[in-house]
Length: 440
Image 1 (spheres, rainbow, N blue to C red):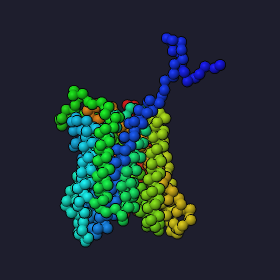
Image 2: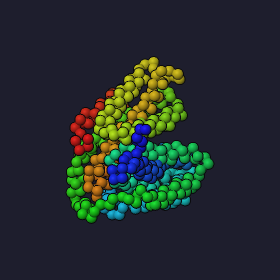
Image 3: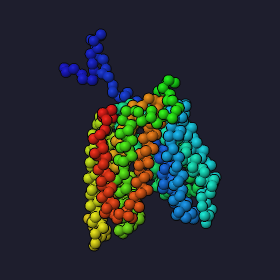
């Protein structure tokens, strides 16, 4: 009779003892990832609210397009996360900061429920509503710092891949739910009811954050580890191994992709594709493909794939996809080109949108894993500030190209502009060869 492979002999008793069960480790990781997924989903709600839902509501209330666009200035607190990141590092626990900031989001939403955005025909956004939206972004930015700190301290190195997949996918789902999902119910959901629903969601999330068992076991920095509150804090951050290289990478890795993703849909609209069809492909289809790419990245990282080699392959595929999209653009910009239904060019143009978002999701998840690995090399009392620095610069790089892309297209023309984007997408591949061994 063959020995039972599921059992191991106990040398003391010569009896057969049960083999070690790998399930507890898997269950422990799930115990961490489930609360993180819920919190990142809630974190995506303010972005979807202000990028997808709020502009439509404000426009429906009669605000001018200029004033609706100026409402994006209320995102400003996101660029100043480094101001309060040291407080999150050194004062209290990330769980307390996360609970308080999430509850504050619920309070602000409750106040917004009692203040309509504008009366019919009113020229601008009321000062009270603008102030509350600014507070909403401030609370969301503090929540972002606290949640990233919690993830950096909570996840083991082997859990970074699945953890960052949860981060990216859940955040995008939250943004879609608040932007597109709630927008579908706008005819039946009034402004007060909408924000009362959001307030209840935030308060429930705050309560669950406080009682979640996995979040009560965070290591806290020792008093001796607290950073010096001096003007040399920046030097301390940049002295963390791999930081200077990571800063350069996160500032540049999205430049070409961000330019094409912002301009290509508008060029398709100019070529005759209807707004509803473009919204379906560049909205629902693009988000679904981005989530699929992020999930693939997390699955590959969970199989012990190292971030740097995976990132190199992902960047190569992204460059190839962008080259195909640029070739489609050149055809669209030639005389006699047509995007009529059932044409090959139309199908190639729409599929290129989905392909770029799929590859962009793969690149983003791998990059965020690399950022978190770099922040884990910092002293625990500096990790929140360090990760906030990287995340802020990553956002700055995307906003920079998103702002300048239209001006580049107007001044250079579509062909030369997309050629520049192609060159910018090749730069991170070359820069990757300079990565330090500490991040390998």
